[in-house]
Length: 368
Image (cartoon, rainbow, N blue to C red; front, side, top):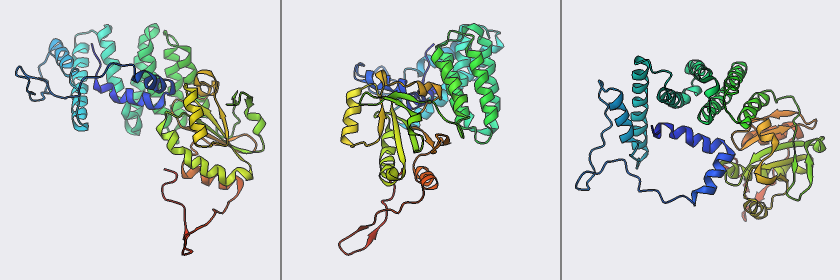
């Protein structure tokens, strides 16, 4: 059975949070056949659009729900409103199908597992709601545990996203999120899940305990030299996981540039870990922006630290003090400047004057 727009938010989040996934999407985009024109209506016999019918009869049986889901899966939204309508219709049909299959005692069937997986995926957004996250986490663990050795790639993606949401919405309740991630890892380890996924889940847990500890980081500079983070002890260091294809990373770049120019002489260094696969594109970016700091790039745009510290979303930044200990994992935008001022001391901004001698402050929005 085809999966549809209900999983669109999950797929979109994967694209923004999984560097390898996003890179693969970018590289294959041009090779895909042109998509048909997006439209959220069905065409009648005379070639005119029919009314968009997203109503599912209350007494619909399994076959009727199945037919409904297949029909709306052929629709494509032409506006945000229609996308939300289609998503809501699919979500409703998913829950309807789930109830029908449970009532029929088909909870061991492949179809039920697929629908159950989709249902949990639809509810992942609730992970950001503290009042609902515990119930959803329990459902995720129960579902993955019930698969036993049958857990595969789809289940790994589901578990990864649930873990990602949990860790990013943990707030002060870090311990329960860590416990949840460990339970997801244990469940997935019983199935045919790639070792990379399990390593990433271990990395989530490891990153949750970074503050106050040193990190392990090696790699190759763009000049071909071996790099070890230990060589920078004595400096305040920003470790930046980024890529040229990552919009938020590129938008953060001017903020890093501004702070590097301001604090470099006081002992501030930046280590950019590029996750670009396209070396030429990276070199062009570095040259055009006259990047002065250290940029690491290993073959294939990979670095062991990415998995080791569960870096699923970029930009991701670790700020280290002079002893090499992590003091922040959220040093972006205005936070970076404030942290550097605390660690290295305030530095007055250079004043610019207009022709009339009026002093200008910093341009608004530099660190957006």
